[in-house]
Length: 209
Image (tube, rainbow, N blue to C red):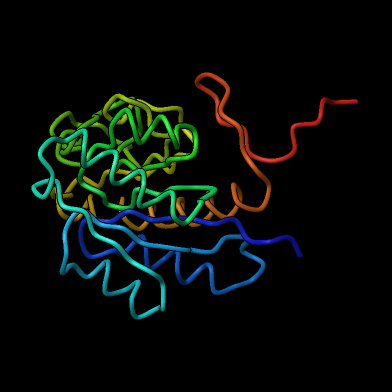
């Protein structure tokens, strides 16, 4: 069996997506291993989850650096120590910058609680509900310099119920998001992936006979 792909996960909060990945990695057939978990602050449940699982952790707070650029460079260096094949932003509430993407561009993925390119930004479920859409969902994308604008890896649809609140809709989106993330990271780890413009291709890319 080939060596599992090394995954570094960056978190800012409770780490439910991280836990889903940790659980999936317990199966050797999954093809990936979480080698480190980083955060933008100390004392969060996401780091505690990693520590309970015996996974190395690190935390770098923006306020401990003179500039955002210095923090971004330090974050890139901290991640580099673990030589990841994939970097997952799992509820990471900071935008990575040009230095980080200069090192890991094309390997960094993030989730968004809407069907991109609709409803980018911090309030995807609320914006979808306010607009009156009947279907929204979750998107996994390769991070680029924009906000939720990168090439799309996967999407899962979630129907909007007539009596949905922002909270009830967001909870169903989170469930879809976790399943999408686990399935996609496993496929990317086992089969490989490549980013070609706006397209993300997973799996063997041999030309058709």
